[in-house]
Image (tube, rainbow, N blue to C red):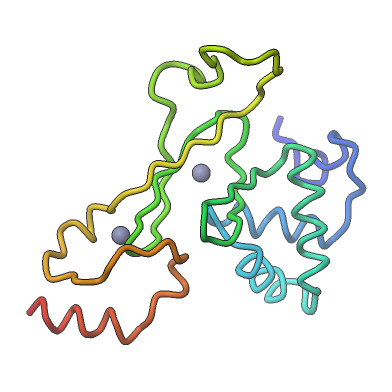
Length: 166
Ligand SMILES: [Zn+2]
Ligand SMILES: [Zn+2]
């Protein structure tokens, strides 16, 4: 039997609120969303909600292990509902595209550190930085690498590039 999102919140000892449910729905709608985008999605659904309230819901859900927060260098935090499988991320330095990358071998091998220094390790955060296939295929791209998230990408720049490609 499938548990509803409200059941899942209760199961994790979280109070069920319309905001938390809306935030959870927003995060599950698309992987690797920023809090800003989550807020926009939630606003479209439940009307006004402060960014702070969105942050509060995101931290409560992350603490309860229902969503995962990744923090790439130079980017806003990204949230996703794919949790507990210790998957990694590949991020394009050029356009900011983010993809899920499974752990290389079996289950979470990178949780086994050569020397864990006595820590009880429960997560390994790995980000593979590079160039996505689309940016690699775009030979006319003269843009220098950036760690900016995709939404900062300027419309102007991409238009010039598509002109050059023709
Ligand atoms: Zn790219
Ligand atoms: Zn992911």
